[in-house]
View 1 (tube, rainbow, N blue to C red):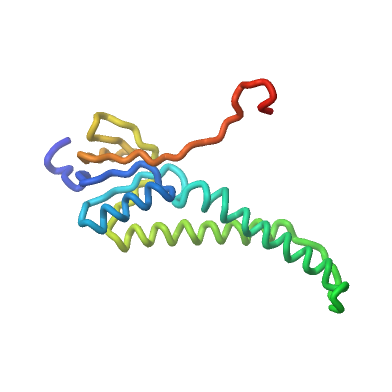
View 2: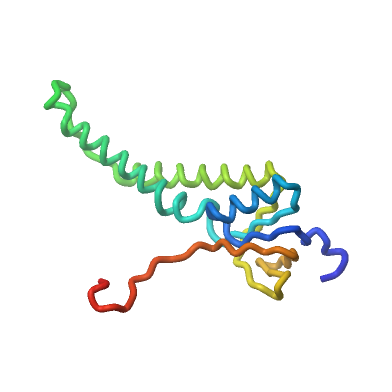
Length: 156
């Protein structure tokens, strides 16, 4: 790295833009650190993108369907109607994308640099993401994990 690449020097680089990585980045920025977050997917992590948030949207839609179904028993003249699955999925996905944008705006508002890419360590203090090389004395790895089914009898 040459001196002209000093814009890619940070106090902290966080690999992973989920809840843990974003919290670490924002806390460091609050203390005045120059921070970058590297994320290869969408900001927000599992909960926002494929877990809690989309699940709750789907659950609320199911609750609405049950309420419509049960309404006649409570004296309401509500007729059941067809459901538009594609509209529900589009609404769910749009909501998640809006949250991704909120996270990106929050990073920008706190002067945290957001780098889209997959991080690869070049050394203990340097990582590459796309064509960029970022350097920091402190690097937080907050990439989360993926569930697996262990290869044990009965685990299936």
